[in-house]
Image (cartoon, rainbow, N blue to C red; front, side, top):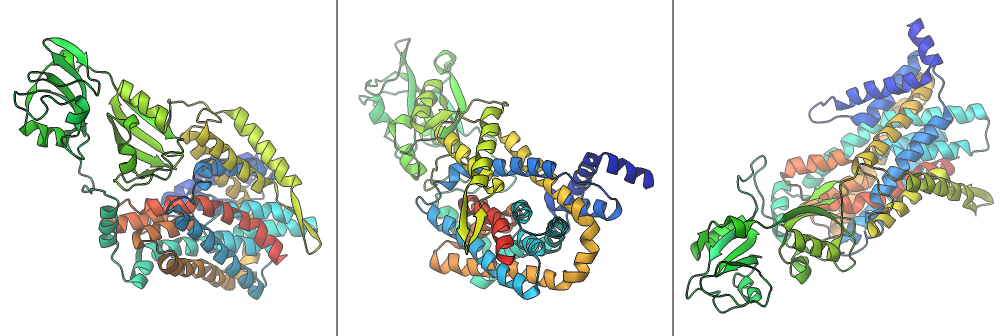
Length: 562
């Protein structure tokens, strides 16, 4: 132990990696479906290391990782943040503001009643509201306080102690509220609500774990029989013979010659046409009316499967049903939609938002035409634009440090951390308008967030370890109970405000509550209980706004308490 302690003191970076390794292992342990996650696991592992060994912690290293994390969060939520108020999205965004505000207004008097110092108050808020990034902004705010350096160090250590104490209650609270307590208070059945909401969105459910052996989209060749409904009609008219089926004629063979099918070509008996559409429509509709022909040359059509980044203002806020009626997407079929890394259920009433990624399939020319109307084709890339990342972080930090305002004669700076968060939002938003600007692969964004936050809290834990026992003796049970109050007041308030004031459907409300707490595990619990993915619609609408507010609360609570 002495040898290990000496090595960790000499090479403190090893203590951080040890905390990360042990922390992520602890974070994966599941007890009745609940796990702490890598971030909280890293905090607890760091505290344990700090209790046993004396390890110096670099303030520069903490700031480096935390700024990287904040930029990653801002970059991810940027496209959604500025469009959150469009359509029904304003309801989820409003909840994403309401619950964090209630959380702050609850934490402040609780901290005052318990006599908590700024560090304990900030840690209670970050843990009870399951928003670990607030620890970083609180750390920066404490560094700016006009108190002795040893007192600052104590306050910073207390952040990690209080967060570790309150996080478990906060995490369990939001999971139970969204999956069990909330449905009982509203008197709703999650499975029935999911079915009802899916029907409203035009979503057809498939059983979990079961998928069709059929390919969803097909290109098949059919001979037009004499007296058939398509004879004498143009291609455009023939495509409308089966309303709602979205069948498209791509090519035809006439008297042995291949002919590209334009919309004004008149079809004749004996023509062999290639029809693109969903397999069930081709088999169930055309299969009973026409003779299928195996013509390899005719069917040899270049087919593309691309992902398209949505930038069109004309599509933003519209439904899939409206988009499907546009000429630009003729012959193009949607396979999936991804919004902020989450798959969005596909239905006629599903709303398209700028920043979505649409995965489409169709002929190469059709997909290229659709891409011009929708946005830009996202070519696979593993290269990060470090020019944009580096300069955005520097610009955001400098502006945050320079921007200040005066309250009651006290000059208050926004801070480098909030500045970098805003810089990330602006960069992400700019990329939603120009997808080739500031490209950061999804994997790189996830790594920024994971290593940035987990590495930061691991170092916070290492610094908090020596003060852990004393802080527990000072504020233990009161801090734990206070954290539960801070957890449940915004949850209960958000439940009734969202349902009866904002009129959010129950299943989407529980997704929005988990988003307002920025806690993905609660969303997963709702999806598991309801047997549906539909709650992600509410989650994605609230989480972008809530992330910004909850992160800044670390600074605000320190200023209020101090």
